[in-house]
Length: 469
Image (cartoon, rainbow, N blue to C red; front, side):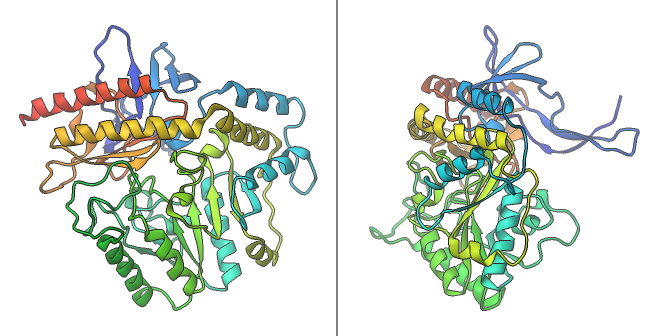
C-alpha cells in the first residue's frame, strides 16, 4: 500500500443523488501520493469520484451514480455540461476547420470578437484572445506596464489571479505560492472583507444577505468603506512609487472565499489608482457571463468601467479559452512588439464561445442565476441564524460563499472537513478552508436548490449533535 501524506481537506463540490439511500455529505481529503518513480502523482481525494459523463447540472461516475454539480469546475461550466446547443456548435466547427492562426482571416474568430465586444461598454472594444485566465492576466500585466510606463501593480490580499510565474505575484494566497522569486513589482493591499476584516456592518454589501455585524452608519454613508480606502491610501503612501501601472481586482473574490467589498469601494479605488497613473483591471474570470445575476459583468454591479477586463472559465463552458478586452488607446501602446499566440482564437474555441453567448441569452441563464441564487442566499441565511457554526453567508447570484466558524463570538475558523467526517454531499472549499463555495452551472433549478438545502441542513444538524451543541 502506498503511503499518503495529508495536506489539507478538499471535499468535492458535488452532491451525490443516491435514491433510497441517506443523503450524507462526503468528506474527501487532499493527498499527495509518493510513487516509486521520480514523478509525483497528485490526487485530490482519498476516494476520488471517477467521473464518466455529464449533462447540464448533472455528472455520473463509472458506476452510474448521479451527482448534482454545485461547483461547475470552479465556476467554469457556465450553461451546463454537454449543453446540446454548445455541443452542436463544436461538432459543426470540427467538421469545417480545427485550427489555423489569427494571422489569417477566418469568419469564426471575427464574428465571435464582434459578438463579445457587443456585451461590453465603450470604450472596451479591443479583444485579445488567450487560452486561460492565467494567460489573460499575464497579458494584461504586460499591457498595463507598456501603456503606463510604470511597473508596480496592486492586488488584494487573499486574491487569486493565476498560477504562471508572473501572475503568482498578483496571487496573494499561501497555498498557491512556491518558495521562489515571482511576480516582481506586485504589492498586496488589505482586502475590504466586511465579515472577517476589522471593519464592516449590516449594510455594506451589494447582496440580499448582509453580515450580522452591527452598523450605525447613516443612510448612504459607510464607515467601513472609508476605513478600507484609508488602508489603500496607506499602501500608496508606503509600499509603491508615486506612479503605478495597475490595480487588479475581482468584483467578488473567488478563490478568496466569495468575499464582497463595501458597495462604493471599487469606485473610490479606481479614482485613486487613476490619479497615480495606473489602469484599473477587472478580473471577471469567475464573476463574468451573468453569474452574479443582476448584471452580465461583475464590475457593472459596482458602477465602474475598468480599463481592462480579463475573462476565462465560463467564457467557453469548460472549453479552454480566455480573453483580455481593453480600449483602443491601451491597445495602441501594445504595438511596440509582435504579440502572437498559436492557439488563441482557435476556430473551435471561438465557435464554442460564440454559442455560449447565444445560449446564455436564449436560456435565460443570467435570470436563473438571479432567481435561484437569491433563493439560495436567503435560505442559507436562515440556516446561518439557526446554527452557531455558520458565521457568514455572502455573494450574488450563483457565486456564493458559506463561511464556517467554531462560534459566532470568536469567529475562529472551523475547517470544513472537520465538520463533516461522515458521508455527506459536500462543496469544494479551497483556501480559505473554512468557506464552502457554491457556484453551480447556471441551469440549476429551484428543485435542485431545495435538494441541496435539505442535505446541507441535515449535515450541519448532524455535526452539531455530534459536537454536543
